[in-house]
Length: 96
Image 1: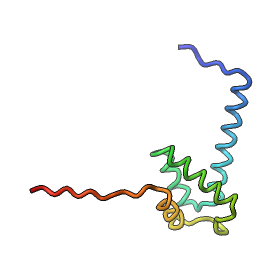
Image 2: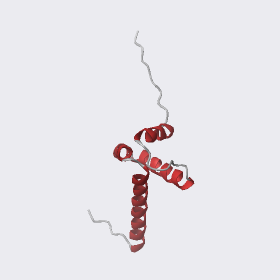
Image 3: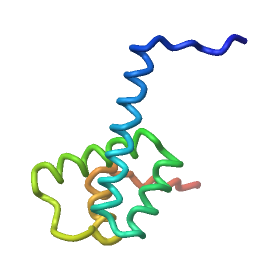
Image 4: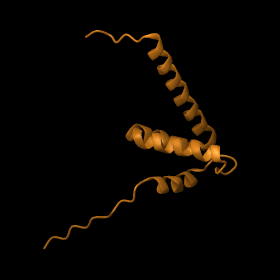
């Protein structure tokens, strides 16, 4: 299999995307406590699309000035996650 060759335009786009992702990750580190950031990292490993949603939400909240001063604790982050995550319905199976 041949290695993929990128032209200069594709390489620039790749670099911009990587820089943007690094900036979002840095913002998350700045606004989340160590425990909350660890939870976010676990989410990233388990569900990358949910991770992207949460990071985008953090960026939007930061830009709007709606994040509390200081870092979000793990409990505050859990509350934020509860608003983002879809509600799960409990299913009861009754056997007769």
